[in-house]
Image 1 (cartoon, rainbow over the protein chains, first blue to last red):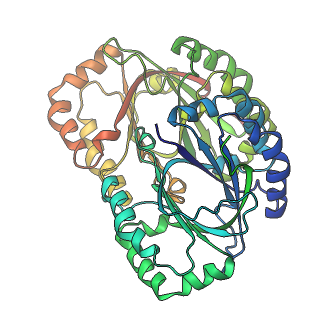
Image 2 (image 1 turned 90 degrees about the vertical axis):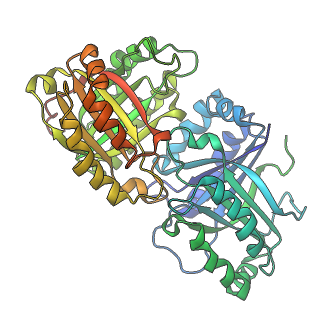
Image 3 (image 1 turned 180 degrees about the vertical axis):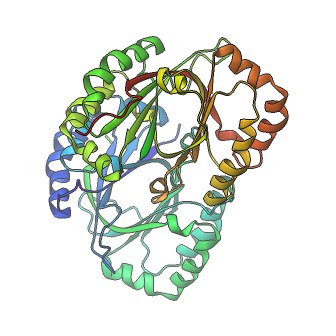
Amino acid sequence: LSQIHLFIFVRPKPGMSESEFFRYWKEVHAVRYGQKIPQAKRYMIDCRERFGAEPSDPLWSGAAEVWLDSEAAILDFISSKEYIEGSRADEPNFLAFWRMLSLPTTDHVLLEDGRETENPTWVKIVAAVKRKAGMSLADFRRYSLEVHGPLDLKLPGLRRYIQCHVTDSTYVVGESNLDCVSLLWFDDLAAVSRALESPENHVSVRDLPNFLEMKYAHTLVASEHWVVGPESR
Amino acid sequence: MIHQLIFARPKPGMTEQEFQDYWLHVHAVKYASKISQIRRYKVDRRIALPDEASDPLFSGIAEIWLLNEQEQLESLQSSEFLQGARADEPNWAAFWATIALDTETHCILEGPQRIHDEGGIKLVTLFKRKPGMSLEEYRRYCIETHSPLLLGLPGVRRCLQCLVRDSFYTVGESRFDSVSQLWFDDVAAFRETMASTEYQREVKPDLGNFVDRKYIFPMLVEEHWIIGPDWRSEP
């Protein structure tokens, strides 16, 4: 049984500012409801950082990352009293729940750093992507890990790198919206800038159309906030 | 007009019969029909055939007609939805397994008025396009090439092709690309159509030209109007 790394991408409800959204999420929603769901062994909030050209209407403002013991635990999580009466009931108070995207994944670690701390100061690139039309899922996963992964590993300043592949069960009833979430950690925003401007990144970017559907490639730079973790409970 | 199709199944521990009864007599009446933006509302109740699996993917479909995306957004933020329908979902549905699709309906065969008014028996099938086929090409093939073959089937009384709207392709791929709806007089007529030479020789082999065979999910249902067939007057 492999551990599940669940991503839930979110944005504020109409009329709520991003800063108020983050405050409510961290101080109210996560504390009162999110952390009470027993199946969530670890729970992190990723908040979008302003970085580069600011989009007028960002697709997502952040993501919840939840770690669960197994696939079966996803069902226990979502059908739990704590989720239904707590977390789910509170969602409309701050987020556009109809725009939420949940992706259950399993981790493939390409670079480990061993520096997970209670108060992370680093930032990470979160890239949620879909494979190129017509490419098989098996080919996509292989290419992403074995061909593209090594290109990203050359990025200067990269501290940690994980590819999270969407689970097979997400492809049983129709096609999954997206196929993979990649996480790339750097010391700070300046280090992200340096990495993105590097010649190594130009090589990596040129490779993207070989396996990605570019209109479905979404990137944000996020800071981390542990609600439950880094130790698994 | 947005024709929304919501495929749902019972929460764990609830039977299909209990689920359908709750939907028709409690959820639809007490909550869903109170949402003023809903112009028409129909519940399709799955008919279990003896040769089918005992654990179906879905036990029913809600069909909801909304004027446009603006009204849809209003409905999602209305207290009737938030404190009513949405809050009631966990009481009966495995809401995490729900598949909701916003579609644009193309009428292939209008059919007799009786079927519009009283409902009937129909085959509803979810489809995803063949890997590598563009969405535009898929939609064109579905309407212009495949649908005329459906018109040649004996026993089909009415036929709709519901194409998933562009808004479902902004973040990633849509789970499904289209839903077909075929009406029959009764279960016997449905079985005869499926066994016909026209279905076996024309329709079935043609599916391989444009759909992904691993994502074909058919289901036979009977229709129940909650609001409709006449449009609800302005709120």
